[in-house]
Length: 115
Length: 110
View 1 (tube, chains in turn green, red):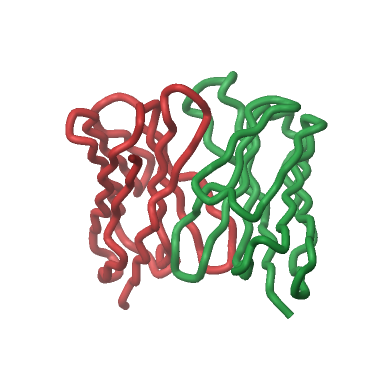
View 2 (cartoon, chains in turn cyan, red):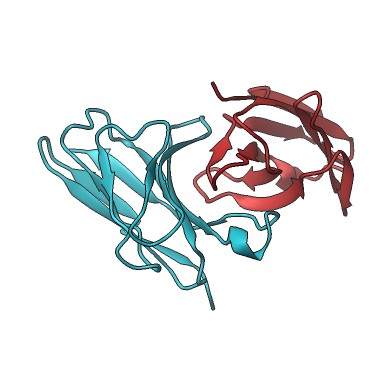
C-alpha cells in the first residue's frame, strides 16, 4: 500500500546534539512538508518542498534544516540551535499536479523529547 | 501577514449538530481543507472547498465564503467518536504552502 513512513516513532535528544527525523513516501507526490505540533496546538509549518533539490522555509524554520535529494525522501534535522525541540513532528505530502483539491497525506508522526 | 482563526474548544451533545467556524487572512487563496485529528494521531482529511458554497459529505458539510474569508464545518448526528480536534488549513495561490489554524477541540457529551 502507498503511504508515508516516519521514523522513529519516539526520539530523545541530548543537549547540544543534532537529530534527524526520517520521512519517506511512495505515493509519487511532488510536494512534501514538515510541521511541528505542540500540546493542544495546531500544526506550524517548518519547511516545505515542491520539487526535488528545492525547498522553502515555513513559519518556524529557525533551528531546523532539510534536504530533498530524492522525490521520495524529505529528512528533517533538528539542530542544537533549536532550544525547545520537544514536540510532535508530522511529515506530509501532496500532489497538486493532480488537482488543487488533493489533500495532504500525513505520516504517523515522530515524538521528540529532550533528555 | 497570514492568520487563520478557529475557536479553541467547543462542547456539544451526542445526536446534536455543531458548527465550527474558521476565518482566514492569507496571501492568496487556492483552497481550504478541514481535517480531523484524534489525540496523538495524524490528521485525516474531511473536506475541501475552493468555490463559494456548501460541500456535503455524509454527516459532514463544509461551507466557504471567499469574499468574507470564512468557512465552517458542520457535523450532524454527533457521535462520541467525533470527539477530536478539527483543523482548518488554507493553501496559498502562488505555491503549495499550506497553513493550519490552531484547531478546535470538540468535546461530545452523552
